[in-house]
Image 1 (cartoon, each protein chain N blue to C red):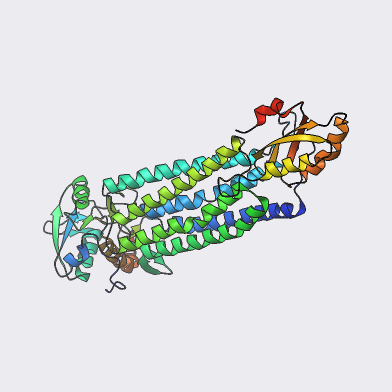
Image 2: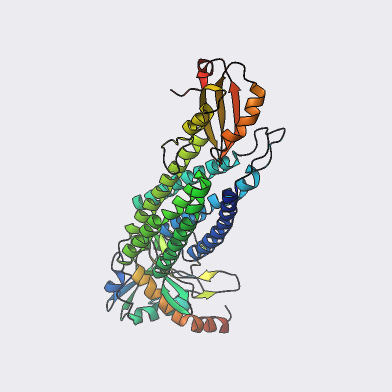
Amino acid sequence: MSSFTFPAEQHQAREQARRYAWRSIVLIGATGVVLYLVTGQSQTMKTAWVTDVLSMVPSVALLVAARYELKPPTRHYPFGHFRAMSICFLLTATILLCMGVWLFMEALLKLIHAERPAIGAIVLFGRPVWLGWAMIGALALSLFVGMYCGRIKQPVAKTLQSKALEADSATHRNEWLSEGAGILGILLVAFGWWWADAAAAALISLEIVHEGTQNLRQVIGDLMDEAPSKLGSRELEDLPKRVEDAVRRLPWVQAARVRLREQGHVISGDVFVVPRPGTDLVGAIAADLGGVRSVDWRLHELTMTPVASLEAAETGRPR
Amino acid sequence: MLVGCGLPRDAAGTLDRVRNGIVRVGAAENKPWTVDGGDRFEGVEGQLVTAIAGTVGARVQWVRMPEFELVDALHRRQLDIVIAGFHDKLPWATEIAFTRPYFTGDDGKARVLAVPAGENAWLLHVDREIERRKSDLRAALLRKPS
């Protein structure tokens, strides 16, 4: 099997995705340093900081996976390395979920033990200022950086039809929820409501748990050979139907059935055909498989199997 | 000193209570930082806390206790501030609130006072007074051999 190449538009988008991944790592890393410097003893800030660092992980995973996914098949991996993206994605979703649960428990314990946040002064430009104001500033910075990263990645995810990238972009775009909760929490602390710190932290960690669960569900679908589904939803694509139609239009085909699965950025699957009598099968398949594959750029590894009747291919028939 | 628009506020109103009133200062002797002078505490922290009480027009009420009891009483807000030669690496940081360091010696230990956690207006006031006196304190501490 030949190695996979992206069409020009997607190839460009893929390069862009890698550039954006680097850019968000740098931006989020810098924000992380600022958040860390003003964290003090606030649980909200600690949670916001962890969220910030975690939101870098998908970008790192993307860069790692992008190195492997296009490697040609080897003796050990005869089907290629496309699942690298799914594996990286599984890893990041699991980390997200675990950290979310852990931070939620920690915030809950702080509330139960009535641990009050001590937020004193920080010296900025030679003047002592309340650290809380610096925290709110850092959270606002993190909010804008998150929204920016989410916005630049969204169109790229669409072009690439990349679920990993779309989930990453959605995580960035949802960051305003956690940063907003954090800002509100610190503001309430300023008004003397000490519990707001841990309460905001609990809210933020629940948002992390939510993101983790969402991402996990998507990647498990991928690893379970789920049929191609639309970006950001559980709705199935009509791609199998379109491939089936294309095959049925071939003059030598009597009947056809198609099953497809997503493997990271590419789609692979089987085409079962009942040929008309007297067809030169090898020649016909060799001549027409390329045309069928061109229905969608993501189609890779499409195998065409001649069968006596579609019932013989019933195993591949979804019920 | 005016604190912006009255924010942050204390969770239990310490700063408002001590203003023109009484500051309950918990103290344990830890030379040279705190020195028990009988009716009052001397040493750099004794003088510092007396000066800070002066900035809010408050009188000092000295409370003499062993160190671990001081931490417990401060956590339960039975004291307003504690001086015991603490440094900021002590493991009580979640129960009580350490101030900004007023001095970092050659041993690398940053010396701090402690106030109840959650009393952020009071903590900010003490932090500001410490920052204001920091260079004088440092000069005084380096002058006399300890």
